[in-house]
Image (cartoon, rainbow, N blue to C red; front, side, top):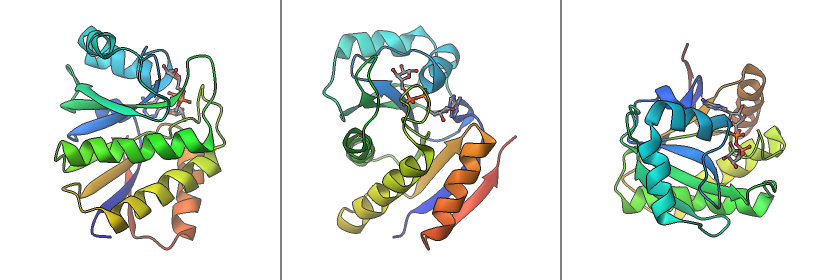
Length: 179
Ligand code: APR
């Protein structure tokens, strides 16, 4: 796998990458957590573009502007229906579709949050395993311009959990501490 994977402790809205992935719902209504931070920092234009797109299927992913974020774009990964929770299948599908959107858009760098592990109620360790496995299998079958993939964990305990899963997976990843 030629892509470089980075594990970052920090705030995904501060990442200077082409696109950051939002932990979204199928209604594309930006609520709390990552979505709330994106709305606050990126601006209402992001919600307006989401409103124009309207509801998307569970597990899908769509691109909007990044507004005033450092990232030019946001990939909205619909891991759950509003008021519901994230499942293994929806997490796998939305991780895959986020990578597909990035490939189609010829992005070279994207940043993922730990989708599902907040309001979505998904176990952190399972999230790390599923997202990492999906990324490794995506790139073993599909060539893409993407060469830098960041996982940005806000919370130290989640960062540590991702670190332990990544270390056990014998993949080369680079640990980055962002204040
Ligand atoms: N940067 C990085 N990670 C963050 C940030 C941030 N600024 N803010 C929160 N997180 C972390 C949370 O701590 C959690 O570990 O992102 C993970 C995902 O949490 P949520 O954002 O709650 O996402 P999710 O669990 O997938 O639930 C999605 O919540 O906000 C609503 O509209 C959203 O309906 C959707 C649902």
